[in-house]
Length: 65
Image (cartoon, rainbow, N blue to C red; front, side):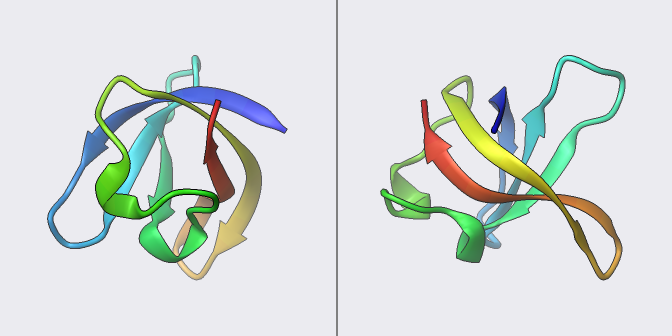
């Protein structure tokens, strides 16, 4: 599993994870595990599995670290 920090959350049910590279990783609320999307906070460390979505890379199995 990869680790990162939540960079931005939206009120539309998705967000972006800062991965430590020049590209942020998109994630959708349906890919959050162990907590509700509404319980996540910007700056929070998370683990995730890199995956592919219809529009490109996305984080799956997103969990608080």
